[in-house]
Image (tube, rainbow, N blue to C red; front, side, top):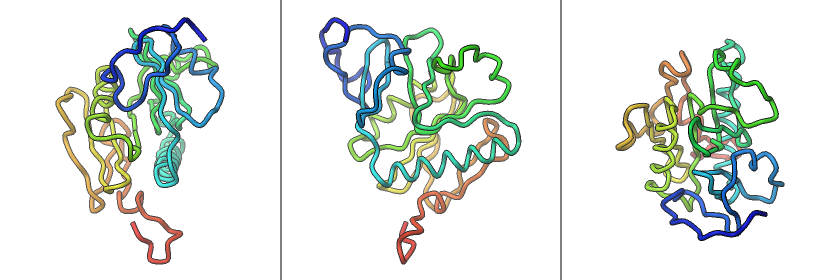
Length: 211
């Protein structure tokens, strides 16, 4: 543990809490923190943490990540990552871990150290919001992604069953809010990809297939 310092305002990373007792850290620290039930990220050199996801959020993230992963693997489009894939943003000591990330195959050559954080922002970042995170929290995170070069951000809201779509060049707010009657579209980021939102939110273990 490094030297303690004053905890910065929550506005630094409103979707998380600042970890007390740490000074400035590098993104590499995320590769060394033991599993303790929290998810850690680094924002401008400050270590922050979130509680692990619940059953619904975890299931949705895993389902979507598996669906995207199978699609891009079969077509050689790129690489999908899960909720332990650390992306270090260029020009900043910031490393975020999207619930699902994706980057295109032509960026593989930029990775020279496989045991280090991925040295760029993903092309697509997906965040599945927890009940403790509100729209302002996740908007702040979406803006950090977009300013780092992410081309498409999906914020998934399990409680309400909708998905906010953020696109590069627009940081004022989501450009669309999709409901269960809509379909996710990979646009030009994941060409040809689509997924019915009702299927993503479906719970096959419930007798009435309640969504």
